[in-house]
Length: 283
Image 1 (cartoon, rainbow, N blue to C red):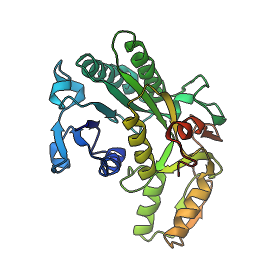
Image 2 (image 1 turned 180 degrees about the vertical axis):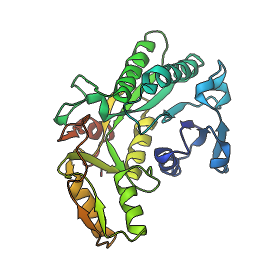
Image 3 (image 1 turned 120 degrees about the vertical axis):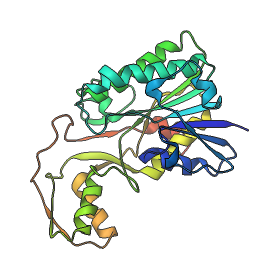
Image 4 (image 1 turned 135 degrees about the vertical axis):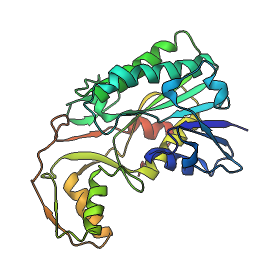
């Protein structure tokens, strides 16, 4: 049976990836730092492993999977922390090189739209990244390191560049989580930015399904924007969420400034994604 390992399996995206894998006849190996966070089942094996303490036999320790979906990354949501390239980047590279040299045939790693930096409009995979955050820089650097590794090792690589997600289990620091918390406190108003930013949003369950489908291709797909391909304003996202949850909290627009490391309007070109998966829409 095909074996698929998932690092960061107990995280926001990871839990949805495990659900997205459940319809397939595959053996799933969830790789986590704390084994108590997930329950094993007949088709889900949980392996406790901290990638920051990698060993030469890590590939064997995670069950010698045919495919690795690599989601793990520490230090978020502080996208400007020096940790990302001073500590996290070498940790990530050492672990991934170890499992690749151990015999891993196929690897999917999640990237970030922050790799594009302050470039505006519809962003395609052919645009040269120009990250302005340490996180975006570290992610982009890792993608290049892995591409160089392909000169010495035979493995397929897919870099699933993610944009913006929402859904169950999202971090407490995220916009909709804060909005939900304000509603649960019975707050009369909710402070937010001007909300005019255009972003590319997908529900995390859809993102997880796309990640799984790309991983199961086991092909050398390179960078793939894993996104909706549609610009949506932050304010519209919030108002639609309030409407769907039948909430009437007042929005206090313009309280917070716009982030200085994001352009006002950008979204992903997902034509490559749709071509690979033969789909008309990523939603």
